[in-house]
Length: 138
Ligand code: MN
View (cartoon, rainbow, N blue to C red):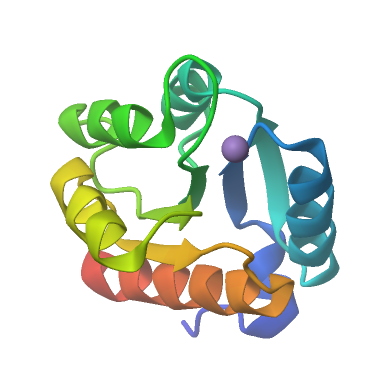
């Protein structure tokens, strides 16, 4: 049986957005919902790790700079837990590229986007990660 395509398929696809900045949350959540994704939000790393476990999202968008547990640490915990290790994590970074590339790899991120991230690039990367994860699961 053919898998549902396009917007219909994405209706059931849950994205977890971990981001402490309210404006960024609004922007990314709005565009993802516009493209048919469901979005759960966490405003800090601890909540992000907990919701990753509870909700099992298809992709996690992880802001790096957050008070308390930062996005690198949250990603390490998500990748260290067999229940969440396979969920693609896309880091949203605001730092110098070479250093962030190293940290993203160390933390176990599957991809990263440097801020300011155009909303369309977020959608594009989410779509890429969902397709990659689906292909890996076959
Ligand atoms: Mn932040």
